[in-house]
Image (cartoon, rainbow, N blue to C red; front, side):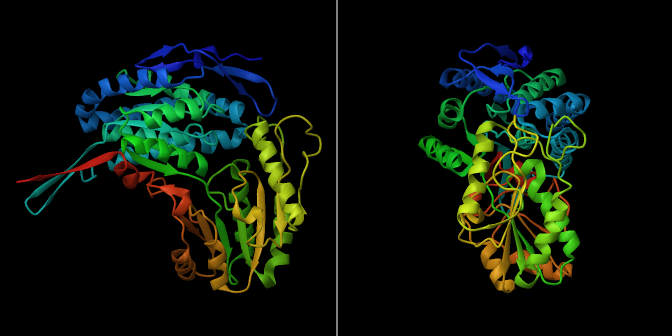
Length: 473
């Protein structure tokens, strides 16, 4: 067993603090306990919130240019420790080494740079008639983040909150908590004042709910499942604080009859299997014209052979283990359910991949002939499972795409960009990629319906952490 002692404490008011109880951090590939973090609760949350409230006045009064410089200094710290961070993410939640280095570390660096770059041109004040409208930091932010992107999901909240002038109490996922502690070290090395950024480890029902309920927290920014998001809203309602939620997804990839099928299938499968399918925006439903269904399935099966499953520390691995044994069992359950409900297995299926009897591994799976009413077409699986769904015409494709409780992301592949955009506008979802449009760290990110409230990234993400005041002159 490997111990990571320097990363196994709370970070409160600029210092490491011991805690009672412990939560094992398990490497999902080896099933070994690699560290333990304390099981924080209401007491630790209260101490951290008090520290954040004390630090708020000074940080909010810090010149904007200095706050921006701090975010960029933290970004440099991430860059200098990128290899260590990527290794930590691979160990704690199984993200393959290549993906961890390029995306798990690359995305938070991009989002940090993005929010820092827009600060100067942001309309902090504006005049409307005889009113001066000013934007001010909302106060203490309670951030609760998931395990699938242990650094990106944290930085997407922390960077704009710092630029806005807020202080933060972070409750990272207990499944993958170690990277947040590395970030705490980086903030200290960058010179961030004590109390501006705090980390309290613990479970959602204990530390998470205490943070959402705390009267000293002005806003909660949560990323996670729909049931957990509902609970955050319920708990936070008692103090009528702002709540921003980035929840689940069941994103549809609509392939139109004039699309480039090779591109659509290649990018579509990649965006389904990304991070082992453990991505809220994953394009898990591939909608294709009935006449092209069998051809597309055949192409997807062939393409799936490139997604090697195995040891996440190997450069050739494209799909590592699920984040935990619990997550493996969840994905396995959905695959079994798909079979029981009559979906056709094109590749994969229940059971572990050949030669991988240990570790939280699943078989990348493609179902064909999936109906809209099937469980695998409606519920978020969060694993490498693709549902290929035939449709009769464009109107039915849009109807199927919109026929879930989710609305986070999606895609359209069309013969022309114009046609693709027209279909994208009809999709009830917060983000749509047309013909493989690239991820934009400055564009707003968030969902419709039960995929959440509020937006992250860029100007829209910064606005979430600000109050608006009108001064009449």
